Length: 247
Image 1: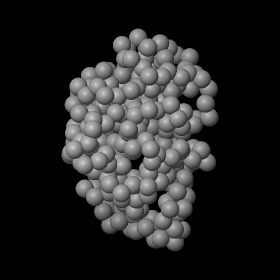
Image 2: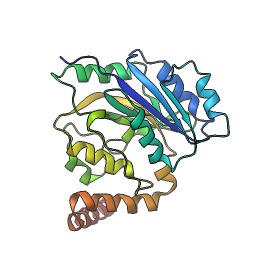
Image 3: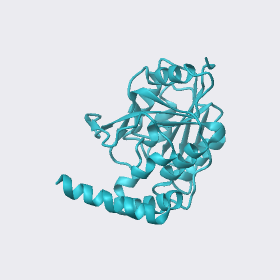
């Protein structure tokens, strides 16, 4: 049995005063408390940092300064993190339930050594925090780096990477560097464990959704890099054909 893992929960914010409260409250509600919490803010002017500091959370780090975008901020979080696992819980997202971290920790401790990756399912919520649906792509029982040929089967916020194998995000990608990062993590992994639970409420207003076409182009570049250009072309043609058939 493994020792209790420590989680580095990293929240990236920029003028997120309207959505940050549910994120903070979900952290405070966790029954498993072996974690550190880092807020990496891009220099908000709407009181985001003040709200966070007043929440009662004991922050390991609060950084508020201009950055070069979301993934540059995430890299700052990685550099500051000291835990066994990285957990990116962005502003507006929230842990699914108070026992989420406990369930993830239990899955890790059931192994003889800490798995390289822990992952679970994702629920999508709207701005009012109402449940919309389960994420369309379901997390597979068996996950490896080749799995993402069929799309990003595990939401980034439901993907916990062991810090000692996690690279920095590639800042060449502005919208989909998380896809590239997850694939790289899985390439360095020999043990990936699915947690039999929904682990995150994902707010449906992410950066890639706001720039959907550009995000898809970036994802194609990333997939071509990891899986080959021609296989990626063939796979995408199949995606289109499958969508037509389903109609």
